[in-house]
Structures are given as C-alpha cells and as structure tokens.
Length: 177
Image (cartoon, rainbow, N blue to C red; front, side, top):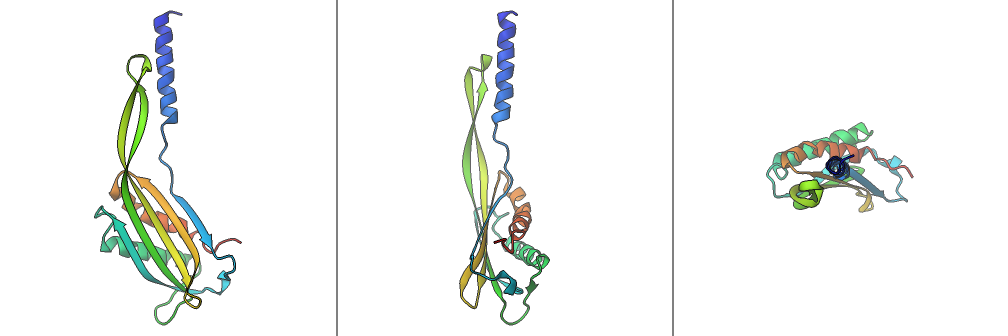
C-alpha cells in the first residue's frame, strides 16, 4: 500500500471514530423519591394547588404553558386511578415547578489535513427541569416527588416535550416499595 492510501484510510477511520463518540441526544431523565412510610393506597383524590414557571424563553414561560402542564398532570393522575377533587379537601395536594436555562456545550472534532487538528463547536442547549410534588394535607408532608430533566436546543421543541415529561413522571406513581 502506498503512503497516500494509508493516510487517506487513517483519516477516514478518524472521522468515523469521531462520529461514533459524538454525544447522542439523550432522552428525558426521570427520578422519583417518596416517603417509605406513606400508605399510597389511601390516596384517592387530588387537586393541583400551584405551579411555577421560571424560564427566559416565552415558549416556556407563559400562562398557557402553565395551564397545559396542569392539564397534563390532571390527565396523568386520573389515568393512574386518582380522582380530581372538584370541591372540598383532597387526599393529595399537587405542586409543580418548571425551570429552564441556556447553557453552552462544547464539542471537539478531528479536522484539517489528515485529521491532525481539532475543530471546536459551541452549541446552545436549553436544560429544562420539571419537579412534581405530591403532599399529604393531613400531615403537611411531602410523600412523593419526581424530577424530570430534558435538554433541547430549541425552546419551542422543548415546550412540545413538556407533556411527555409529565407522563413519564406520573407513570412512576404509585411507587413500588
């Protein structure tokens, strides 16, 4: 084999390896914590008490976004067997928070002749976190909490994923002890 052919082969291999190690867009991460002593079979009704949004993007921080999240929480909890309390006290009080911030991510790729140089690319990512709390009003204590995170460069696309964040979170209720 000639030296030129070997160099081309090595450069092609480096490019192939670079594409394999490029970070893949990760799916939503959902973690849950709960009170081990709580009896989740006694909770039959719920009411969404409060929701807070904290994001710079108008697509993620508006009254309609807040209403959509609340509606998705109500649908998801109803699908899990709970009933929304229309009047009077409920067995569970639901609170939620959603926040998003912009962060810069840096990725390095081989570049240049023979792949001996490095090309650095800076990209903006929106990192969003949704926290859903279920509180027992009788004891005024937190009995269940989910934390869902999502990373998406486009705030509009992240707003479309909020319902999925809620569903994945509530699918972990009631907890398996």
